[in-house]
Length: 48
Image (cartoon, rainbow, N blue to C red):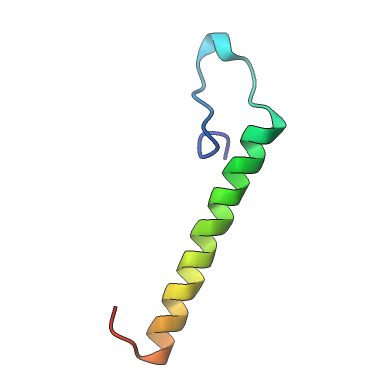
């Protein structure tokens, strides 16, 4: 999740902070919304 938020995981950078974790969580939620939307389109019979 931290990597999705922009954390590079280098030795000298320390631990990811709250903002980095939050940004990663937002990206995961965006991916989940996209998957839900795609499944709804498939269920409706739309061509994608």
